[in-house]
Image 1 (cartoon, rainbow, N blue to C red):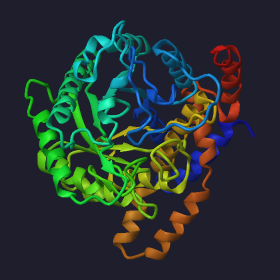
Image 2: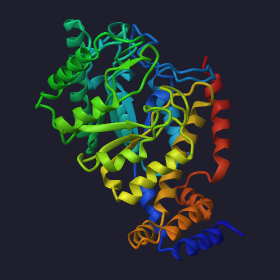
Image 3: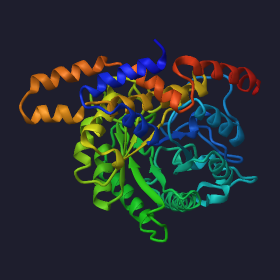
Image 4: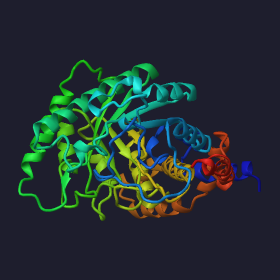
Length: 419
């Protein structure tokens, strides 16, 4: 049976339960996912004469050949990866990926250092998102930045944060689309601290000073705070914990970012979405990391990922979530990492959009919970694959594993020729 016939059979099967497959495919293709530039080069960055460190809780492991060595190569790799991924895309850039012909320290970053990224994004017809970089710098070597006890160090990072908001605003204005600015800090302690209160008080005060700058247009620069669980050098205590970030975001009326890999091993984020969105306008979700660790681990089409998107579907809150990726695996082909992870996220979105939500919720209201549970189980084996294949065909990207041919050709022609 050819692909068109399989799709029609699948449509009929889903329609029997009130699911409009064509509408689901269309909606999934329109929802943007923000790809992260740092998968291309293993989080090294492109600062001129950087005094970088590998610390700060971030470390890409592996030495697969072909790492991007500059912005031009990273953008070429992203262009190739995006050609193999269906659906609307954005690209997320870290401040350490500025490109200048002279050294510019983090507290003096300017939008001109990202003109190459902005010109490329315009040519690609996509929008950019942005991140301050609070790691891989001498002033982050001891593991503290915005919560640092040294006022001078803290002031340096506050200046960096303020500068990054202006860059995000400029990106948003240039692209005619708000730029999401994601705040992540590595601050924390390897061993049990004597004072957990002080660093959090200083972190809150630093953020207050940064966000007090009303000259930045908040409709163009959308701030989101991301929590973490632990990292290299901060195994025992993390300043920006889940509770800290959620409480700060709610009290200051800014956004909250939840990364799927930044919670306890038995903890999942899908159950938190309905709680946070009772009180917050929106969430930024880093749909990432099937293994709980602050690096590597390409996104996979697993139950955790499916449950996140099912929660969004069943709450009807697609317009209140922003989606981004955050992983950096240096052990496999980096183009392949992009494609595997982003296609997995898009698959999970489609899986959720094909959920018979209205029917399931009606059954629940009526107390017909046996039928509700039975249908939830039956839908796990519905002909989802036929719909996914058609989605890829409609997006003019390779169907199934056909994209591997393009990846292998690019590796041979481009990646392996990099020293």
